[in-house]
Image 1 (cartoon, rainbow, N blue to C red):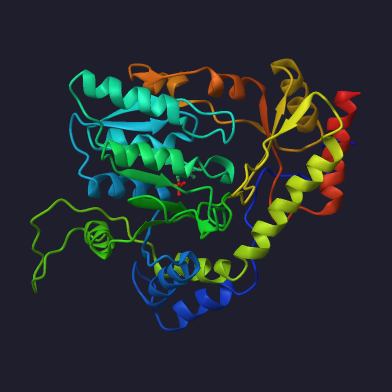
Image 2 (image 1 turned 90 degrees about the vertical axis):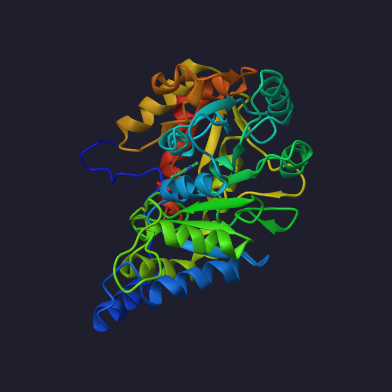
Length: 377
Ligand SMILES: *Cc1c(COP(=O)(O)O)cnc(C)c1O
């Protein structure tokens, strides 16, 4: 096939369910074209109903903004240290720097690819021995796979360090039947264009503590004190979600389950068609873990094979991407301390994300698999 006549296959593209425009039209018809309105409240209530567990949701402009306010709620400030999973997207760590605090990176474990409980405990003990107790832990459910909730939360509570759960990639995932996005002292979701559901751009801060939610909304709407004029006793932000994008979110919530099912079927399709090769491995769900399979990732036997597959897919107009480059390898974080075991470096070397959208068609999947099989042959 030739790049000109073959349809582009994206890694993960927006997938509308059909009712989004109805909610957006309602917003126009009633002139609620503002960072507040019925869709914002409705979307928050949809999220709360879906997540259960008595959580409160604040709809914000992005997952990154939600992380920023989440860290602020956990009282992270100048010169504090925050332990952060190294194997993640930079948006998990950047808000630490916004607050003048310092990230300290923690490597991953093999079973989930997420924060390694052993390295986490080593790091906590070492930071305390060096005279500074970490202010918070950022744990990430990467690619939708839950991190080891039990081990990580046991360590956090033993040392009384709060957890900010980065569930940006994990809406629809669960651990022991409990939904991701409800485990952290504070949790965040993202509705960016490539995520499980999208509002074109957006995020949410989730907490079981209603005061957290109310404070996040206060900060997100410029910290306006209760007065007839504009009165401010705190620095504010313009981080609220708009009523238009929230309308898209309400429509998307109606198709969350089918989206998760489609992504899980993509994973099953790839696995069924490629697992015979000894050169390719898939990340299995440990017992009790349920991943939304946001992206299907493969672990190839070598960097060379990974690149050969990636370049062959690109030649056929198919987007694929190496796994996240760990934060401890990023130039911007070069001066940060890190507790490493080599696992995320290895995954970054050999891993590849395959097209995983909930709108992929069977023909697309066959096309992708046949390119990969050709490389393996
Ligand atoms: C997408 C993402 C974010 C940031 O969310 P935005 O809505 O894009 O700001 C944070 N963490 C992880 C792990 C993500 O994948």
